[in-house]
Length: 386
Image 1: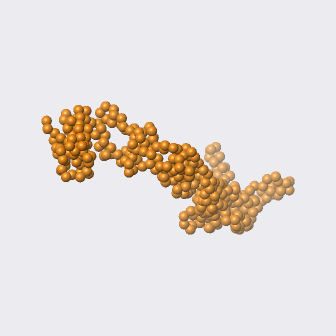
Image 2 (image 1 turned 135 degrees about the vertical axis):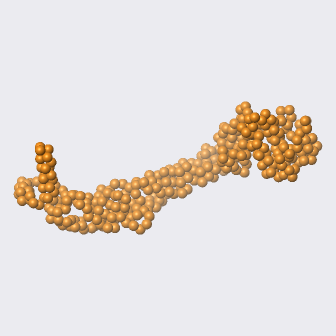
């Protein structure tokens, strides 16, 4: 049976470009896919026919010979008048599995294998890892902000080989096992399976003479000193990103980033809640009863006088506007709250005890909260006893 014209098989004209020929083959491959032709026993033969046509027409030399001599250019496996070999002897009538793998890679290669470089393999450069650095600062530093010098261990590009991993900075060579693809194919029955190349571990390149300094990795461990600007208003959990200050990239790839996580230490006087500060100030019983002024510290290092109203109880708060923490973004400033804590005296002398007993006898009408509580307690007990 005479062979059909290769252009006719792919559904393209004789003057078709390489892209049109490829599109024609892709369309035929989809059309003749086994999953779509379970009831068509001729699908495999038709696919092999399309593959045979594509194998010839995608090659410039074979295509030129076919255009000049037709099928005669590849008869009996010879070069024919045009000197081109067709490679379709008794065992070469189109390898269905190999052809399908070829078109599958063409259709889905970008999704499965990522971007491709000039040689058809994957991009060699790889971004460096991100680093994390935990930094503890005082509340005063969080209030003012500061310039901090830190030492960060990590990997940097090897100077001896300029990051290539090869002695003298030589460029890596194409892997001979996978021809730079980073993967190898093995046929298993009907399908062709792709695996990561064992020689180059998927990189597509190998280093013949590894650098003696970095042992072929292109990176060396080194502690770097960096100056970090900590803005005013940071709090525990604030994250600062330093772009490009992470680990060096592989084979010319970009460096990772350095993330600084802030932890603000607890303060011996102030407690923080967002932008507000709280200061618990103990006052004596007499000062709380009589009232008066008390001097308290502020986070900026200053002092403020606060008036304690007469009869103040524990827990009463006074507010100092603008004496809190600055906002991390913006020009706002929080407030400072003074909380009264009435202190009960201890280690009383005999005379102090006498005076307090005398005061207790005279203060029945000066303790409304006490009187109110015990009246409620008496009512509760009376209700229980009927």
